[in-house]
Length: 276
Image (cartoon, rainbow, N blue to C red):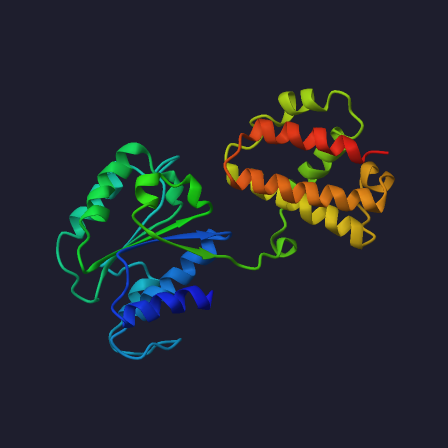
């Protein structure tokens, strides 16, 4: 569990200073969600919380089995979080919690609200009940609708991500094909338009793509990989490092909600400087 941030929230709870809504920006939404569930266990435990809990309250077991009536998790249905999902949650939370201190709703991928579902939720945020808490999880707080973002306390929840442990070999293959395709290619911009535009539908997929590229370029610099492409073999070590730095910058543009097609064009234009 990412202890420092959640311990701060627990401290605020004990001091009766806990806000009614939080926006958690994280680089790993799945791990953050699991830590949120652990936080909710501690928040509602009528005893002194401990792992492998054997207390009679059964709250931890209900949370683990997604059966706690006072805890609702909302994830996007299709591309967006829908208005009906929010209305259903509001209806269930019209009564006081029975087994716990709070009714808690957790919104995963909080950047996926549309205007209709966001407007429906605003009543909860603008007129908060003392026994209702909202926790929003996102990969980029700037992508969350401003009317929601402005009504939440915002926290950063970053994790050490080891790409090598979760490496997708298909994405790695795509990365190597792309790097080789644009190498000394006068039509690299055209290649972006004909092959890469719309290659991935979700921004998170592009983030994974360039994170995989970052891992590959770094590893090519530090080790004798057997799968080094022609471009990696031919450029100098100093230029390979510059490519690593460029890839890090591109990731920042992706996370800041930049236009993907423009980002790809910027990437190939900057990469030209490092070919020999």
